[in-house]
Image (cartoon, rainbow, N blue to C red; front, side, top):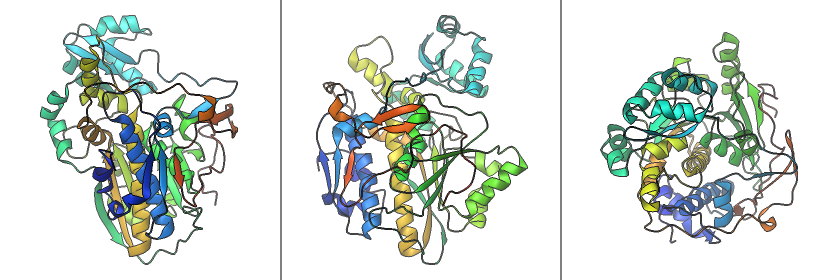
Length: 453
């Protein structure tokens, strides 16, 4: 199979490489990128489908086909509003700014992250004023100041510089998936129809922008019950209708005793905990690996972090766009394009690829629990996905795919809480296993924090 990622990624999931002959990729277009971005999309989506097929069939996986055009488009925004518009994706002062010695990205979509940046740069409400303030700073010093204030920023480094950075070195040594055997339990009583292989599986989704929600959306499409939990007042703008398809969305305040008690109750009967809290955050709330094993010995714990699990930035807040700046991806694109500004990937491919790898990790762990009674936990990171992608650079950019057309859009109308919408056709076809979400995208904070089934 002529895909630079397939074998490398499949090797992270014991036995999955043995079934690669059942995975076919229909080459129908590529994203315009200085990296093998569409190949990464095809591999991550395809392996999720292959793991699902293997789980459903008990080993002899049915055939799986990935449409590369649709996989590329789902790495962007799949939702197509009908008669309404998505809210803005970015905060008014988020973006790239020139500093004294290069470029820095400010990520200010969350209110507290904006407040942190403004505490360093001044409480400005327009980019021009922020730009004037940034221009007086050295990039690394500003990055450090904003992070120490509780914000999110990334100084643009080259790939070579990142490889010499302590965090870059640590991430290069890490596996793509950190697997840990948590416990051994009795044979799994869970069974499901072959065409709805995740029926009866409960997934507690404590993730936010964007990789974790992508994983939950995929799993919900094959009948898993996904309950998303957010803190009071949380919002993600345009991302929400994109990623909450098929999920219930509830609210818990984990700073209160009642919130902790309710989460504990949910965990007792969950199959999977999917979360993107910083490495030490849940442990500080009383939900360390040891605590989780005591609450529910059968619980599969799948975790996401931005900057890896072993370096000095293990507890640093991060997003796809920031990791692209730190890891050299935006710098390489800028150099190859001979541009005057950072040139990131055409989509947030680190988020989406890691999201599908999270889903594959869940599926692999479910199979292992059912077949052997082994309960696994998995840890992945955006920065490791960046490390994998940066090894596959291109010397010339791919030609742009033809624009989105009517033939690319699924005819089904989804009556979301924002209005009617359609979606780009799903990129995955699995023999005998249709995808179908039980309900449309809903607003956050609209469900009770209880299991529906």
